[in-house]
Image (cartoon, rainbow, N blue to C red):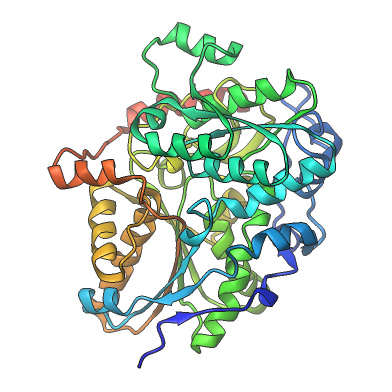
Length: 454
């Protein structure tokens, strides 16, 4: 019998996260105070983030950051996650490629997001914080943080992008079950939300808007800190448990990936699977390709511009050097809500600029077609976000079929789609749409970032 699943015991859960900033040939450009244009120090972030997360955010020297034992113990409820050889998908595609996926859907929250949620909730508890706030797009991060907050005895308030709040009621139910308070964003509960609703009463929201509201609540509430599910450096750091495990599992399989693929919103699950392997490209001369699969309707890597921009819509964050569509960008209402973000993480943007990774854009219908094929062959219904990674994998596998190359492809299955069936219903009913944005429209949004860089 062919070995299909490669598992590791709990004892193999990584003891440290990998900090790619320490080995990058070109360090990321500094995060700036928007008022002074001076580089931030960790203590500048303390009013918003936990102190340890702030230190991790700006740490460019330590290659390995120890994982606190209580976090490793919490990881043990679902880690190490399986690495699976997708034999039936390979057969359906008729490809000579060997396709593997890392199954992050087995976490209690159903996605990779819990890897950072547990860490951030732990650090908040250790600091004596009682309340945490955040935003969420499709709801995976909100669900993960709600669970992590409950586990460490914290109160959690989530601003959920309004279109996803309406599209994905069961994501809301998950957060409610774990004890969180959920508010559709934009809302009338914050100044940022009121300003957006005043300008456009029918605004469906964006991650940038929800971030503004969550930060405002954090800085105006006693003993409260803000947490983030993607984009920032410390979030990408926490996710490297994925790739560190996958390295050992690929060794068990007797293979090494020629190509690593993940969907891309702000960059958390891509970082998690890619960075541990990317260090071998940087340090050892390996030639693995790293492909970020983003929505064609939110193409920050494929059509965005590298410059300083705010991470939120209202301009409450520091200035981040990143590929951006402009912080005022209004993404289309696709079902992959976790990918509807205007910018890419700072580290990832520098790596993209330096040629260590590449990106492709995927139409919504192509992503669901690939997701259905994956479900029918491998028995897991993927989240709409993960469908983008599967679609990019299908593209690469079919190229191997055309050329006869026997490449090894590894992708990250970042989460399951069991509470996203309304999106699949639309796909099967023929009402799922692709959204196109013209160069002229993009230029108008990018101008909001251009103006900050004059």
